[in-house]
Length: 284
Image (cartoon, rainbow, N blue to C red; front, top):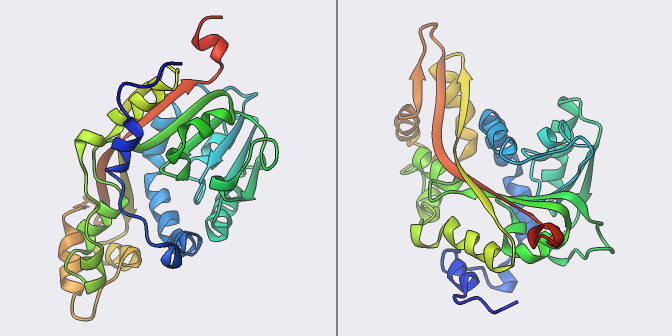
């Protein structure tokens, strides 16, 4: 295959935050610490997630590999559609939430695997699956590797030039603590968005499909005070800053006629998928 005319992978790196030096890098611990927050966010995103799974075909006979499964936002509903799901994550606390969410949903065909995807090898750590999915996870960093594990189709999901979870949480907790101010919003640059990912897949010899869908987070609360009490666990509020937090959250709360309130924060994500069977790709 001819070399790409443009190095899309280098362009993609421009939109990634700088990595910490090796002595400061504690990714496993970081994801374990964030597991409870992601579990709560995934629960609020549940109604939107269905649309992404509807975008590509899942057969009842398919085996599915979910790379960087987190609390099972993708794994659990996929297990309800497919023959089986292997859920891989490097953080045990994430896997614990995935296991519990599967149990709560009555899912019995999900197999959790504590595994670092970056060092995983085909045939040694994992076998090929019919569908391989990476949703906002480490699997997005090497699409060639992701494709090699997929017998039928590879699927990726990520933000579509729109606010991600860090941005959404920043809007709720901005001005509430020094920690939140240091973290700041995640920068977005439309020039190096899903357009770059599309071209990377295309230059690998595949024909990618892409859909941009409304995404978001929503939850109903019995009253405004309950919303304040429940949502505060997603961030940090310093003493004396509770009024700032409440005013921030009020922007996303809607009062209902029965006295309840609904939190809703919408954004956009893309789902991209491609057939990995080269005989189908080239019509051989």
